[in-house]
Image (tube, rainbow, N blue to C red; front, side, top):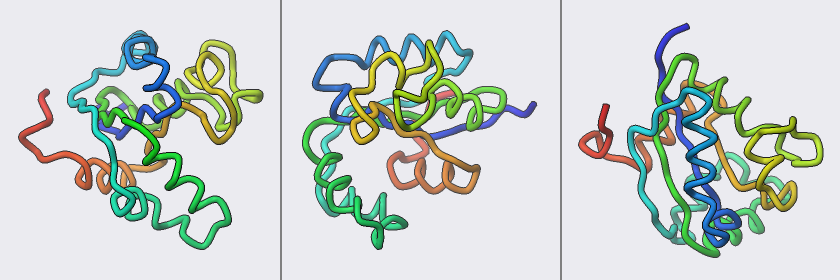
Length: 140
């Protein structure tokens, strides 16, 4: 499998509970390297741009509200098959359906407050990374 990069967000429900370190431990135990990380607070405009593909969906406004409600941790992860691996490590969107040991099973409060986001394709990873990081911020 090829080494690739993916984008991750540790969401406000997790940062408010100081779970960044615990989530990072799960990520690293899965064999992924964190090659960039920063804690930020998105503006409404940043959240709307990031999630614009969901603009027509009924949850869009609530999602943007949630993602601007507190600090988030943006990350670039690297490893063999990083996109698929991180999606596996995150677990199902609904923590009730997530496998034991996954981030969402361990830490998510609900389907809406599910603690993490991960890119779903190479194109999404490239777009999401470039929206949130400059090249000189990524080490590795």
